[in-house]
Length: 199
Ligand SMILES: CC(C)(COP(=O)(O)OP(=O)(O)OC[C@H]1O[C@@H](n2cnc3c(N)ncnc32)[C@H](O)[C@@H]1OP(=O)(O)O)[C@@H](O)C(=O)NCCC(=O)NCCS
Image (cartoon, rainbow, N blue to C red):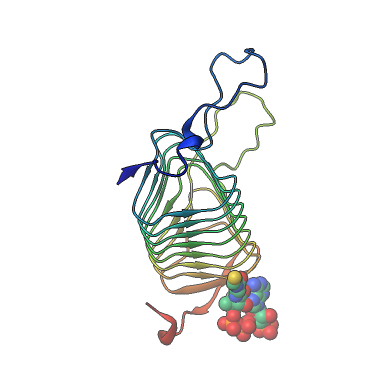
């Protein structure tokens, strides 16, 4: 691990405050000073990484990625353009998260997971429209080697057990058993992942 230094040093200088001091604190740089990086991390343009995040070795972070506080990414991960992490999230190693995924707060993603483009993970059933009522927040748990097809939605608190495969555009409302293929909305079991596709 090493702090964010080198040719991007200019990025950690606070930006000039365009509000003329109306903000209580100066605007911070796109990458918070507390963020730690492994070796050989490559990043695109307009990446925002907030405090307490960590990016592991050999990761690629695409353009316009946003990571809210306490997002931890393991080694050898690919994070596609425009993906957003809402924070307090753990992502394992050798994970591919395609472009424009939304990874909600309190998500847990294990090693070797693949999320297709536009996958959405959410953590609360109730939609608050700004009112103050209690909501429980529980992110999805995506276990080792799962693959999630393009545009799928993972509802709050569900678990995809080992190497589950979710079809494109499915909505997962319940836990899915290991090695199952699930499709539709709500997603239903159709068959098991063939042996030759298993890790
Ligand atoms: C779920 C999936 C893996 C199934 O593939 P498969 O094992 O080859 O299954 P089949 O194509 O034989 O489909 C079985 C049935 O499910 C239906 N089906 C397949 N995928 C579906 C989906 N995502 N949603 C709804 N129905 C689906 C098929 O129409 C077929 O129905 P039928 O029996 O009435 O004809 C595949 O269709 C899929 O969605 N893959 C995700 C691809 C993706 O998102 N890739 C991202 C790469 S960047």
